[in-house]
Length: 233
Image (cartoon, rainbow, N blue to C red; front, side, top):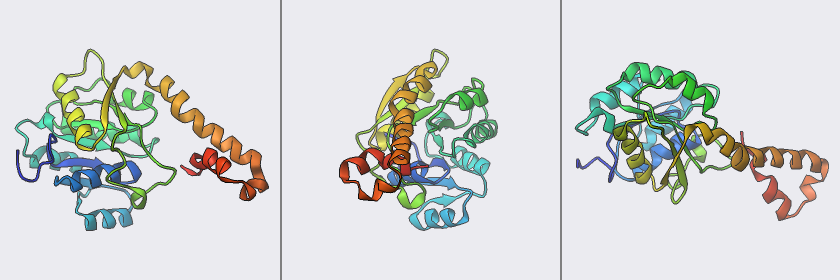
């Protein structure tokens, strides 16, 4: 293993989108001694990430190319590009990343909380393994990112009979290097599961906040705790 490669994880890691999740992935890899090539549409975010040690690529496609060309792993599929773009943008970014890398390029994963659109965009591409970290906060952006965000958290890795074992292993190694626990899940069941355990609590928190209305500033800790996630994007 090369000196700049975090334990169990091929380096560099590509990260497209450097907000809360992408920034936390980048921070964890850097903290472990690895290298990160990243991109974000926001110039200020790119500047902050560069100051932290991320090599900024000129485009999302350039992230994929840099990971494919600059890795120390013996095989390209050992290297991973994480698409952490906003939910509406993720399908297009995933499709472009896969088209750039091709079937023999780096493994591409994403962290979208709704999988139907990204799975459709990937269209069964052999380099694609979708995943979802079950971690986050109500805050967003690079400033909210933390290298310890994923420590001890489950990270869903969606696999089916057509997913190559080498691709699954690449994502699982990255997840473990971030301190999370890879948990396999059938892609078909993801959105229904997440609707119950993640999306519904956000809806209920928003409704609670709206119901409290002007009285919210008077509330004690229990109400604020229950409504905390309503502050998220």
